[in-house]
Image 1 (cartoon, rainbow, N blue to C red):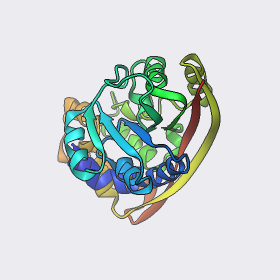
Image 2 (image 1 turned 90 degrees about the vertical axis):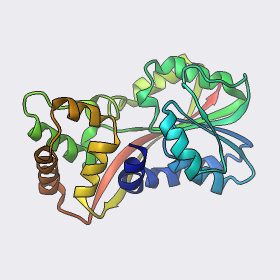
Image 3 (image 1 turned 135 degrees about the horizontal axis):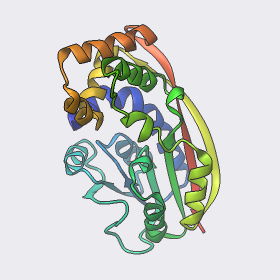
Length: 254
């Protein structure tokens, strides 16, 4: 999964936002940066490049992602870690960043409380979540394809997990409960270019957690063909440029 994710999804879906977040992080001039849910290192490599004086520690719950990411972004220190039980001392970091990872935390207040614990006084927490599914053209088209391929019981991973934390008021409430003061909330829409819709579909179907749900329902070349056909009908065969919306939060340890 990490290799497929890196090849087909990172350039289209994650790198545009990683470039924006790395610039925001660099502007804070932090010396000790912790990244949560780093995946294959799309943001990590940019943090190392844009903040060369900082010590960057990258973590992910998935050991395969850590192995892949450590080879992709060797300038960071990589650790396997659960965001709800971080293996770091109190006050060890000036900045914690997380790109599109908080939606996966089972207990977000607990995870945010851990982030608060490992931040030094006055430290910052910078992270992003996806907006509603309908504001992400690529994933809305993918979900439509899945619903066409599995009309009775379609996989609901994308609406419920990546796009399941799309209410800024809920995010703000969780941050407040964990002891953060929110300094900025930004709705950010970026446009990205997919050279091939078929390749993008392959990335989603085999390089994300939806893979298990599709395989449980009987993955086949016919299923892939249906998803690609529906995505193409909605977006075009590629190259295609389409918008994606996220929310970016900048919070201070209160």
